[in-house]
Image (cartoon, chains in turn purple, blue):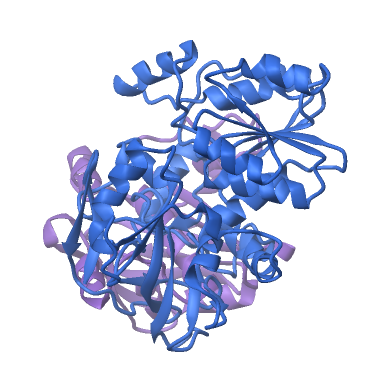
Length: 194
Length: 395
């Protein structure tokens, strides 16, 4: 981890949590309540290299991350994110890939001036016959504090729920080639997607 | 198109709704030629299943003709197919182990939250069975969108009549898996609670698997008569004491394997059942599990308990002590339909399994609401209602 990555700081997290077990820090009952930290793991029945390559091309992310309107990739490290927010609004930020290890992990962080300061890391671990364990950890400052988070929850845009759903969609897309939907036809699908 | 939709407790209607169409590449659209009302549809009809919404199209036992295919479907227009009620992707870890009802990808991501909270992990999708199981429109309709059509539907030769194969969609594989879960050994005595379609298919299956004797338990004379036709001995629990009868009939040992094919709508005025009913009606939400309690207590030491019956929530006074002290094995689960379809189609074609005996009523889809009412009100005479869209059949 580069030292300038202040948002996802394993050492800080671990120090907050008595080292009595082997559970991931994101599952600690004693997290710093000022910041939101979301961690989710999913096992995907595909090889590491395939998943890493798909994820590393950020233009693919909108295919399974429901709230992303689009990601414009500027160069190997820089991208611009446009994300749905409650009330039909969008929030935007520039993000920089701060660390990447091929077939292992990708870490990014929003640049100065982001609407919602955030950072994230996704890791890929070979799980043998089961495929690959993909873990996403996202740290963010909720918009407008607690009330902002409440509103976000009402709109089901709350990141803890979103992260879990997004990872499920990633798994569906990679394992089955499509994202499951109960929509009866295209018209209904587009209405639900809006 | 016309479709049978749920509008509330004891309120189903045939509505005109939008036609389905291809959404994903692996989809197919099926023109329904025959669809059955399942006993578990009565759980919806009675309002026992949460997360139903007015307008939800019901039906998870159906078959028909392929009329449209997505780019990655392996079906061809004009083929006759039976569709499994479980929606499974065929490519996840569970599907690769043929545990199709545990498929990771059959449920839309948003619909997985409820089951994740309630059960720990989400299960496969199901057609026409609440939003917790995906919110997929069901097959009691003129047309259905079938996801993952390259792994689910089984192609049937045109010459085979619908009624012989329709039950491959659910109740025949469910009865077969129930018998398989009972791990029947030659010489075994198997007791089956509930002689509805699943119980009756479990009886036929147990016989084929080598059970020496089968004891069927119900209170509807007509259903017990059908059980007897397949070689079962019977106990009418309104006339005889079930536990005492089972012990006497098995020489004081108890059945080697027991199958609960009743589930959460167990009938009869037993004290525990009445308490369950009071809690149900006061929204405390316990299931009504008299049959599973009785099955566990009757089962012989070291025996097997198979539970195809549908339970959705929590159970009070579950005889966990009897299960542990007697060293019983409990096996259960939604049916891995896709796994059983090919073998059971062969069994039907070879005449080893009789399916059409079950059908007591045939109606046009337009008469669907009458079908629900008669199935609900008269379970003695009405053993199975098959709806045929566009047939003009009246009750």
